[in-house]
Image 1 (cartoon, rainbow, N blue to C red):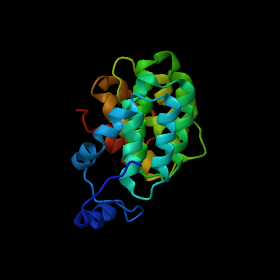
Image 2: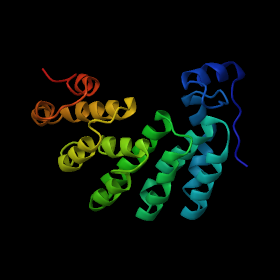
Image 3: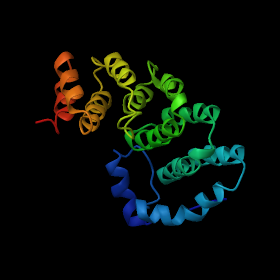
Length: 211
């Protein structure tokens, strides 16, 4: 069984950073990457079903670093994933949820739609209007990897659905998505902000790069 050994002195500080919601081995990102490198490489050579089973096993582990490795495995294998696999992976957004794993999973889903643009709408709909606000956060930030290919209709739908949601991580996501897109299409973002009643937090984040 794949295991990692952490640093005891780093366990408490890492747990505190995540508001003591999770137990940590005490492995910072470079150390975790080194410790899991061979495991992740091996995951590319096994059947997808077996790889998905390894992700499921990692998510049962108590220490948070194992969830990070699970996401690293998914990301390393994203080119092999089908839409059905992506659909199955969305359940992990709702397990042991916090911004650290949710936002990293978003990279997996965002990369998938870049690789398969014809699937963008169906992937988006896995998250849009979901009862779980972490899922809806992914709908808002799903296209962060995109520039010219970003679908403003989908971004608008995701933001408008949650525009009045009194949840910090939703409002932060709205601002983040708009701020990121303002790097490539500042006029669209400026007009969007002017035409919508956004929260102060969302406006602050969205307009950071706008003159």
